[in-house]
Image (cartoon, rainbow, N blue to C red):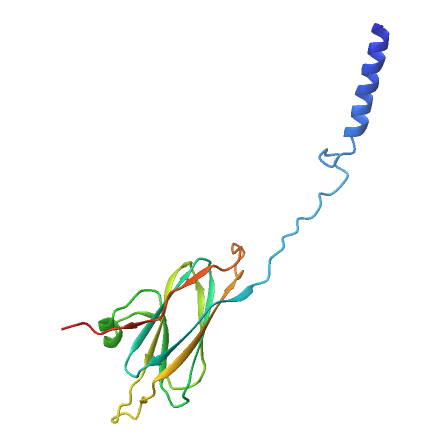
Length: 188
């Protein structure tokens, strides 16, 4: 019986050695390790928000907050009804009140103070996840400069986000668009 037990143990030990020998985890020194392959995903752009508002009178500022939860590039397309309207478009990283906006002291990331092109497309550099602001100014007619118009506008905005521009980017865009609000002058 002892002899039968020894034979059985010897057979199990031999079987274990035979089975474990060819495993890739065992370094036999005669094979090169497999190459490491790094797959870099392509950048992905998606429309993350759209909004439309009307009765936008000349001389008013409108601020639209956007909460961006993924690192990437924002692109904003703004269109309005009348070709002769002077629409200034800005993107900023902080919320500004009427005094800062009308006084020119609001720091913007991007400024587009021109009549054309229509529609207007602005694109940022890569931004961190944070809240950003799109500001619009419907420039009123100024007889001395010949700039502006008296058009009350309907505005459409489409906001896109491109992610995956950097190796650490992962996941899809998640944004919360705030409601467009008129930035009122201070009450005296």
